[in-house]
Length: 184
Image (cartoon, rainbow, N blue to C red; front, side):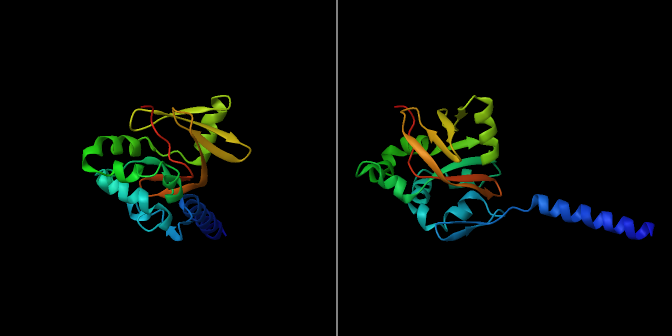
């Protein structure tokens, strides 16, 4: 009897532990985003993030975003880049604009892993808003409207998180609908 109870408890403990650490695969841009892969390995498969991936490559940030991290990335879609004035992306990916492109891209990255629940907690502690320091040194302001998570840049541009908690082996991605820009 004691052996059976011990085995039941041991099985339950293992089952709970495995379940607790399992993270679901999320579909983004028609492709599965596997929690076992890093940010770049997943992003290259999303048809909604081809502009972002091209910009990351042009900026020389692939190796950084493949590193251990962890990172929280607010990832603009192709449609978000399309909202920028015509010719902006083409200008930014030119070699002479490397520093500006790097600054804009790292403005979408926060050091550490902050899932939506972590961000919501920070918002609650901040009485409705939280300030997130970006890797570029700028600040993003995050808040909620109902169940929707929003962020705004230092210029007042607002972006909505359309897909939250896309877990990666080296952090988390939150898909956003508008490119945010640091103060210039």
